[in-house]
Length: 282
Length: 221
Image 1 (tube, each protein chain N blue to C red):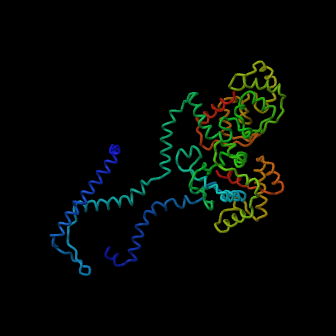
Image 2 (cartoon, chains in turn orange, cyan):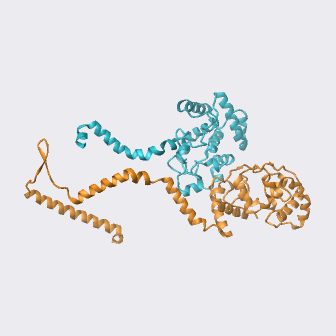
Image 3 (cartoon, each protein chain N blue to C red):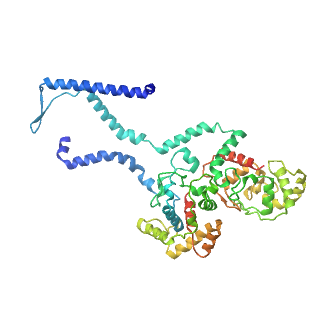
């Protein structure tokens, strides 16, 4: 008899019993009444083909609920529904508002571990369809993020050129420097320009400084991209660089990357994706 | 008054109609005119996009993919802004779909690109591991039916007054003009594609179905 432990079942059984008892009781009363009752009372004036009607006063409870319903119906017709009607968009706005209230303060100053977890979650939904679940670019179908945003990638970009994110100064041509010089410039850039401030080849930094003029023509003496004319390299290797790509999109050598600035990602989420993506390249 | 109504069935029927219609009047009329109009920026499909749309219908993409982002946070987080009725003003028929075996495609043009669609149509599992979508290899073989697409555009222009050939709206013109514009539009998509046969065919003046369907998918924003 386990099912009797469920309140709903017990309630349903009690309700069924009550309906049964009431039905039997009321039917019995009226059947008895039909046996002995005689018609009596004052008739109304109306008469339909010989069928008359008694002047029975309305039962008080019935009359009150009838009037109450009419008052409520008038209010609902003219004020209740038109003024307080349900709106799907209104419910959506409430949902977003309560969601924002719940999570905005919680994630306003996220630590690194939170950003990584959030970034991985967003990456798997928004980025993985092109860049692959592990970020490897699925055999060259998209940029391999395991080799992107690090010092080797700078060398690769200088030697092979880079198609851009539609900066005013346009594409970076291939072969501006040979591989050895490119390595040196990359070392200088990572240590002195980028806020990563660390190069894998610190010995080459000074050599790279001498060659920086090749790059500064577009990226500026300080590497900050001359106020948006070219990519800001001081962000290179940091989450902010990824955030920039998310906002501008990219028309690269492999294919197009769409912009992610239609409001699907908040700034914190973009930073989280940046943190996660920068962690993929070692 | 009620006695009078009981004796005049016509006016009684009018009364009943008014009372019952009230609910419809207060729920539908207030913003019907507004929401039925095209949302600002909504444009009719170009002929190439229309051809892609016909392929979308022909291959029953709508059996598995909806085109309707509902106003729930879980959906707007993933797909973008929820759909407005005015955005479907030029959809004949609308392709809302009723079942999502695959993801919603209402705004797929915002987050997928030509090259991705090309990989995905040829071999869905190569970009989405575990996807149950079948490959649509025949789209790389079959030619697009441009005449039917042009006929549809011309029909909706004449019959429903769809604003082709108006300022800031897609050009339609004669069939030859439309064909020329369509080739220019297709050239941009073919340039972003990799399949050598599709490129070869385009040089011969043939537009494969894959080009049209990508044009259509890219237009969904």
